[in-house]
Length: 363
Image 1 (tube, rainbow, N blue to C red):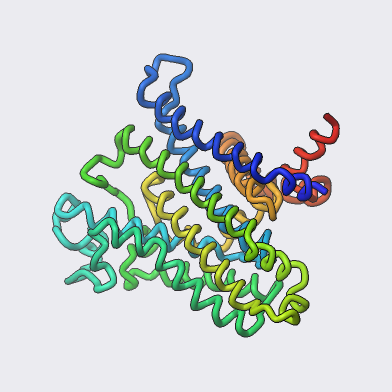
Image 2 (tube, rainbow, N blue to C red):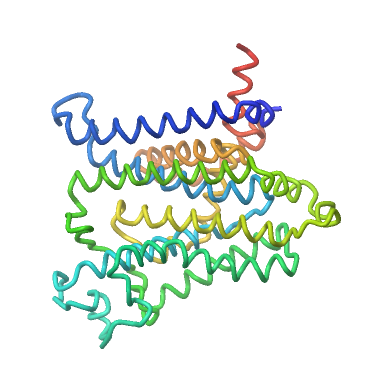
């Protein structure tokens, strides 16, 4: 019934989401850049960066909700697509450093000089160009998703088996990126970014600009997901989720539908990773860790899958709780996260968004 209430008012909910994002895009930069630091309404750069990180996670949760909530594909490896997008952005920012690095090499990043690389690897070519780098942010996760999905869906791997394989995929990539000879910085990853478009990446103005770009990306990602799920394609995806065998029997090429939405989801996750890296200032193989992908599943489950807005709300609320607990009680955060998941499963099976229809009925 909760999902039914939400679906009866999709336009109203979408307008609420867009309105909130518009308010954030305008209010946060103004309160950070214009309002004096002595004012009670001033928003610090730390908060701007923190909110930007939350919104990157919200876009990642949207990507997972698209495949899990509407097509029934539970991925435990979406962190791989997120990290690939982040590495593409990190490579661009590293190329922009040029001779200003510690070793002063105009071509090689510092970690390559330290590891005695003699020349730039071929797969680094072109990343000094912003448009090429942004293309790779989408193409790299998209190609991986297409190749992996083509084999998995054609073999009709579903359910828990597919989830385990996706988890194995991200774990394998983590082990590969930890190797120094891969040319991605090894276990230290990439950091010490200097600027973008000639502007210092550490300044308040650039931080606020990244925040606005993240808000726009979330709005576009939400619009793309909404357009998919409200179309005829979305109805087929829901049919695949609820009765895959019957949908295939009716003549639909189920594998093609699943592959399409899988690739779109991977591309959205890549964009989230690309926006995440310049705001946190680092990208390393730990982003591939399977636990990160499992946390994304928890965000979507807490919000409620299959509603889009629930994925956004779950990502923001859970990560806010993580920030609080890791600062106040760091040793109990994992227990709190596990308890939250259990409590939601037992007492709020429709997620936090399920409280909205209840309040509407009570009203």
